[in-house]
Length: 371
Image (cartoon, rainbow, N blue to C red; front, top):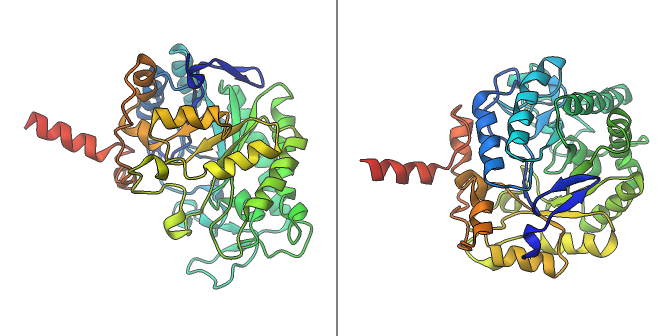
């Protein structure tokens, strides 16, 4: 049997294969962040498609940390019931779910939150939207919000949690010298820049217990001049391993990294796939904690080689599963054809327009067939 379809465990969480649905903003929640039937249906289809581990889109842990419209929330007790309906449906199909906890920080949307976005410090060049530099009290408030949200997620039936420290969101901003110019204990040295992340992990662990899986998604590097580097990322990975993290998903880039953003286009060959693979392999060489590789994986033969050659322990996909929720089931059945996803990023436009995430190309093809 191919290694990609082995049964494995992460901190006691049994997974039927090594494929992960990477957290993606679906644009399907209500305005207050509540879960909806449409979002539950999307997650259920992924479970039916035999995705080993499903991670819904980045879920904001406090009102001022919301990144975009119709984003899933876990910032209040009222969120729990809808999330519980989601986990019940996925578990009923044999799936496993981890909730990603996020705070957008600098990139929060003030039109939605009604507040100035929080930022570790002033960023060179400034910004059109006024930001609020965080006080120590603000930082501790965010740490507590992560803890409370972790508790809610566990009560809602999730099998584990993932802390979002990638893509230039708040915890990623603290790690990055591009965003973090602080001169107190939360800035300067890498140890100081990682302080809030370690505090968040400890508070989350306190909230959910030692036996509950806690994962993290982090940047391998920012691809910004003066930003977070791979060597720094490896050192932070070591710190997190020492703190007891259960798996690390390796990504990279930010919303302002131009062509080197997390969701790249023109993935037309195997060479263009898995564009963070070298960073993941560096993590595998330095650490013992399981490594999850995300970023442009489209081919089953490549996925198999990435595992066999020690680049990663798990493989995370997003856009291919928008086009084909049943992709993993198809591959497991023996149909090894490449994912149909064109990596054109058109799927995000309907989400921005309030229709929710879907593959535009697939819809157009179906409309032509029925015309």
